[in-house]
Amino acid sequence: MAHENHESRYPTDRLLIAKLVLIGTVVCIGVSAIFNYLLSFGAFTPIQKTTITAFAVPVIIGVPVFTLLSLKIDEIRRLRRKLTHSASHDRTTEFYYPDVFSSLVDRRIRAPMGPTRPRGALLVVDAGQLRSTAKQYGFEWANEALRQIATTIRTSVRKEDFVGRLGETEFGIFLHHASEEEARDVGQRIRDEIAKVFLAPQGKAIELAVQVGGISFEDATTVTELLRVADKQLESAKRQSGGLEIKRLIIDS
Figure 1 (cartoon, one colour):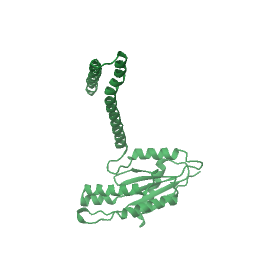
Figure 2 (cartoon, helix red, strand yellow):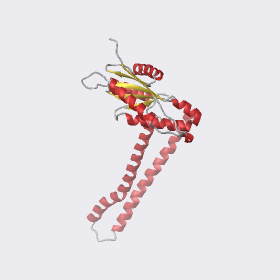
Figure 3 (cartoon, rainbow, N blue to C red):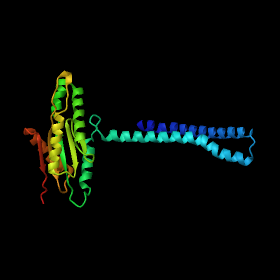
Figure 4 (cartoon, rainbow, N blue to C red):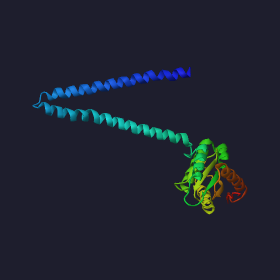
């Protein structure tokens, strides 16, 4: 049944295209005929009439038609970009979906990074506090807090880095060619900046806080391994008062 509905759309589309082509052809012929008719009242030689018609008619018809086509093509491109963005980004945070993020990380760590070995860092940020915020103040306030945290993370990383939403309150950050020390600085900066965010649901100010776990690497590895070790570091960070745990991944030879 679904197959029949899918196929039944095509005759209508073809009929519409045929009508538009026919109408366009008739309009072009009509404009040309009217233009030649008007020229017959002037003192023009046949060569002049032909020359004027050859240039004027295409301009009169072509300019508006191709302007409209260009606008439609530009609109289609914008819609395609919007659809591509929607298919790969979370709506609330505008961060990559988990599978897209993992794919980008995998592509980045496999790509050559100059004369040195592959190098970078992966951070996992947890904002588990938002669960209690949702219970106490509602999901709208929790989502607002989530957006504020996302904005803070976005402004705390570089343009060449990228961020994904890994779970309900968890984010992944890939830091291109970052060292352990640089990853630690980014993690601490994110924690410090999020602590400064002002949020007052129902007139009551609340403090936002996140825990950060991370792993830096300087050799070939996999996305799965990076996420596994980063998650372990995150669990360690949750148990520590500092809320931040970064380590260097050592590959066994």
